[in-house]
Image (cartoon, rainbow, N blue to C red):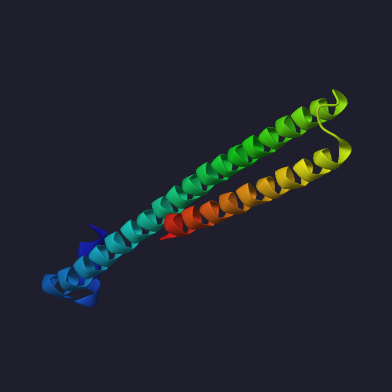
Length: 119
């Protein structure tokens, strides 16, 4: 009703009105759908990020637990006199290197996953 009164005041023809309002309506629909698409994509990326972060932390914790268990076994062997102090030190260094290598591989894998997830 308001639109009809607007036509009467401005003396616009209905074809002018439809040629103006319809493109604006289509533009608004396109913009709203674009905003919804971007928001959903952002939420999806955030979910992936959280899932990858949890997996990374879980894997890191497993590696550290494994290291602690192996170190405890070495200490038991040292206390039981199965190995001497020098052997203990060498095995501990090897164990530490192994842990750092596993953590580096884990970091590299995490970086690859993040890059793949953000594409």
